[in-house]
Image (cartoon, rainbow, N blue to C red; front, top):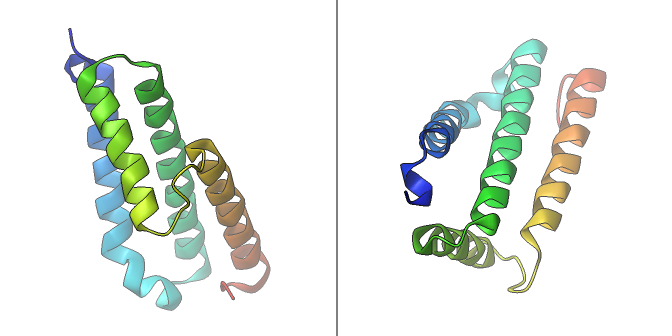
Length: 114
């Protein structure tokens, strides 16, 4: 069985895609949302990052060629977005988690993100 034949992996990828679609569909209306909707949106971001982090860890542990290719593509995409070539993706995930926590704190305190 290959990495992507796993029911768990396929279900997680579907869930990640659903979260991304939901977040992207409301991304441009974020600043017009009420406080609770903004907090819900930030919580979805946190859930997405958590799921991506777990998938990346699974990819890193796999020796399946398709998993290795997907991991390489993730790193390549991060590089195309301006991340250094040799940066550890776990550092990126950690920084994203901190940013999301900061966003949540700002929304809770002010209702906005500055």
